[in-house]
Image 1 (cartoon, one colour):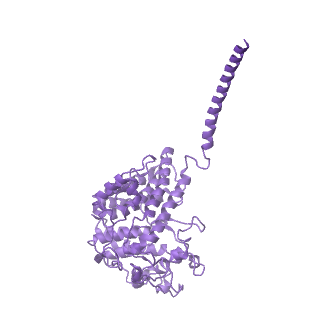
Image 2 (image 1 turned 45 degrees about the vertical axis):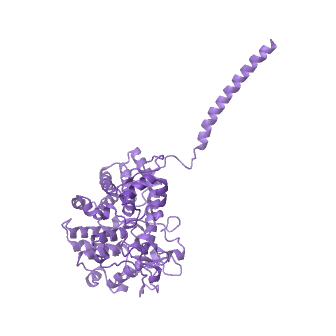
Image 3 (image 1 turned 90 degrees about the vertical axis):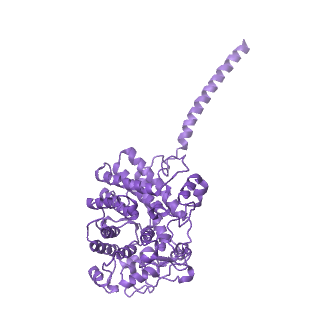
Length: 500
């Protein structure tokens, strides 16, 4: 009996122990899951957090790449060290690819959260930012991962490469949709460090970017002329410098202009070019004292020198870039000149006026060419808060009338637009490439430019960047298909849709 009772007691005890273990395991699993939820890394991040990051990261990337690539390829500035950009000894420029694709993660997060919340204006602002970023990527490389690139599917590590033509058409359609949402949609724009939530300004940016893309593609878009004209007729484009899409930086790290923290040697690896200096000195262009620092650091009687674009053996001594781009306590600061440090530029009213001038010259719109041309120059001067006096002029009217800059031929628009695009991301290169193609794939039709000294591409302007090497190893099937469409070579001279 005793043994039987002990057996029953043991069975009861086992059941109690198993029940206790089950409760413990169930409770522990719940607690473990809760423990693993990091309160500092929430799964859902609001647009008020993601939007500033998306804007800042993408604009910072473009500022850095304008300093290293865009300005130098277009010969606005010149490299004094590591002259690969100038000499056309181009690689994949992976920081451009990685920086922009990295920022698209936050942009997609903003767009997704906005859609889930039914916030149409937030969604539209994200679409505008996304479109600008993708436009830069496809303009630089050609076919790129687009429709599958930021779908939110973590398992898709090998996105397909969309054709440049399809990307352009989709971006134009998306910007049109964004413009409508910004005009008529519900909600508000949170975390907006570009326009402080002003939907009207975002709408103007959407439409102004459409003008840029239509001009870039030209007759590659079958109805480019009518699209352009209809956008202009709507009136919802940049109409003053108040509309400029420029990021105002703070005066403290990490939210300051990206070049400010550079070591002196790294900043001085770029100087004003002899090419742009020659053009600006011809007219006595007062922007020169903003784009470059006088060698004598005397802004009342400035003296400048220009570095030759090309190899290091070609004369690489030139004036430093302007005071707004770097703080040197031993020299005049931007604040001493009554101006602030430089902005991060997405697009300006000046560029829009030059787009309108060129559209008028092409017959796309029935406007006076010189009116828009003159307005483009004046807007650029006003944006840079120039001082006319040291250059021998009283004001803009005096400058325009007496400097020799007054409109004469269509290439004048190119020249003045080229100067105005200083530090506007990669646009200086994209525009020079367009003019080069329109001039018969030759520098001969661009009066203010020549092939860089001792370049490595037979005096031919390269038309694209190479795809990063990691794409070949990590996304080989789609990479190979894209390269096949280029003619079988991931080459800087391989023909992309824009230049075919």
